[in-house]
Length: 243
Image 1 (spheres, rainbow, N blue to C red):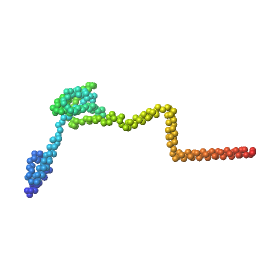
Image 2: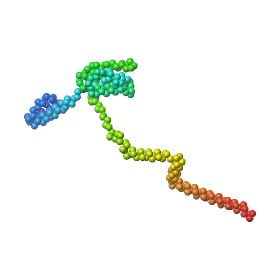
Image 3: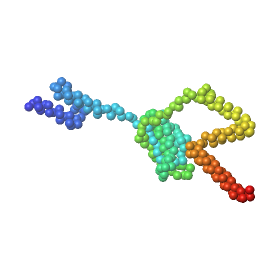
Image 4: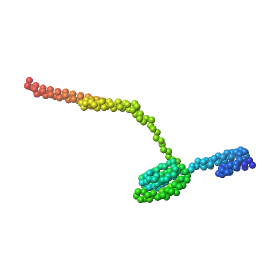
């Protein structure tokens, strides 16, 4: 019975959320059940302490509700002297968000003390636009603390090598050949155009068109024969009595 009680106690501890201090108090070497409990306690302690290690210090702030007509250069003049920072991004107003058209800026400070001083200076600071309207700024931590990395533009390896490209050389050859053709006289050009048109007309033949042409030829020959026989009969009828 004692063994059953001892084996049942660790099961209750696994199910209930134990404090980190209580998990550290489990001593290994007090039996197989105690060893299992100690390993589970260490894993639970690592899980609880892991988010604390990953927690980052907040250093990126956003200043919101700036005048819509404010530019980046004007904002930099207002913020001078700006503390040491490694990221500054300004976003102009978006007309699709009317009537909430405000500009905003993101700044990532290097020193935590500068964040407090910056907030004390510009949180509630009133900006006045060119129309005389007042805008009270809001300074707070940015929801997204990471700074966007600027992509470095790599130089294209093919820049300035078009003259050595074989396709470009072929194009120049064909282009020069076209220039030579343009130097010909209008008469020769007309002859070339007529020859091309004749070739196109000759190519536009189908079995149906050939059949219709042959039928028309046969019909024409029949009409001619009928007309000739009619003329002969009339001649015979008209002039035969006088012979």
